Image (tube, rainbow, N blue to C red; front, side, top):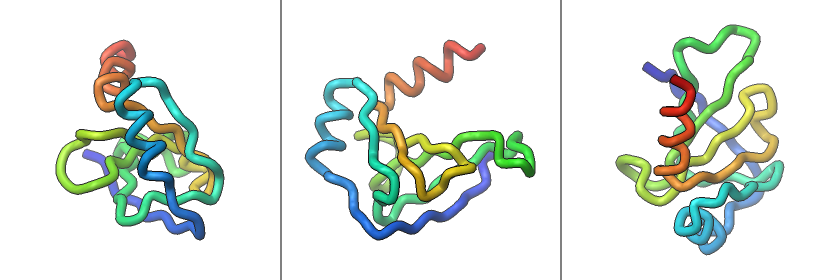
Amino acid sequence: MPASASASASHSASAPGAARAARSGVPRALPAGASLPGVRWLRSSHSTGMNNCVETACPGSGPCVGLVAVRDSKRVPGPAVLFAPGVWRDFLDSLG
């Protein structure tokens, strides 16, 4: 099970841009320092203490319906990439 991690930043994400990314299925970047207000970032319990992993978040409440945000756990205030949920699921399935 993933463990949660919180994030804070001074800028807010563009909701229309996030919605377009979710519709197109094409990954979009969320710039460094941007935030997704109210999201809970999750990190795999398999991650090491050296932060060699990614964190994921699903903006909004409930399951990932609109988009999945992914960021490097070593660069929490850094950029995030936004994926349509189906695209992210396909990527995870391809890992085996």
